[in-house]
Image (cartoon, rainbow, N blue to C red; front, side, top):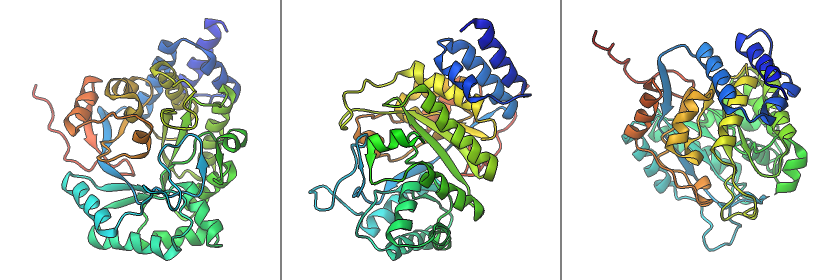
Length: 366
């Protein structure tokens, strides 16, 4: 590919007059000109977010259970019923985790588990009620689309009934977990007993039709092709064109350690930054892009703010799934703010709707 072809594609999208085609996106992913991709993604990000702020949120990833009926070759976290280290959190333990989150300034919990084959639907409703009763100010960003699809199949209820009942019990927003790559060839090869592409999309679609908001994700760097990464982005863009219910997109690299796919070499920072830049350029209808410092570390996580991200994501007081695969990056609140400042921005805390929830900073002295 000539540099002029790359420049023409990038200029088109930077100018905002024409969205990328799938062929354009594939051309960009095949390019090794990371600087050009980063500059274009940064220009688009600054056009969409001209404010001097870059954001973060404070939440805790609470895994209420690690028991899962699905088999995912890429997961080091799940256990089967009867395994010695299988668990369902006692309610007082879970509420203590929420209490600690609130004490640290958090306004949200990210709550997910496996596809538990034995818990009744009423257990999940009561879980939400108990959290909201004790902490009415907390947003519950909970239950991934594969979990919701599992409830739909197991309890034989329509998706909208499942989601309506969970919302009535206290569910505030839906995370985009379990997206991996939204191509059934890939999903069937790396997982068994889990939502396929249309299932995952339909959960979001039903939630958005009820007025809810959610996020979308992509886990890349395993068995997918570059064209399949583009297909994933295209499915996300189509969903957002239809519903407008996505608040953010988060991509991260597959972490192979301690999984059944440990022979796959991990993708590095170069590939991560390239994919994030192309994601910002392609997803012209998704307002926010989160950095993935959890998998990349604080330096690359901060650098991602020059490659299309306008948000550092969560302080993530607790994280269990990615860390089960050996990734152990952690950031304090001061380190999170420092990474944003080093990128030339003012850090602001936000909620799930990307509204600022901290006091507006004082203007700098003249």
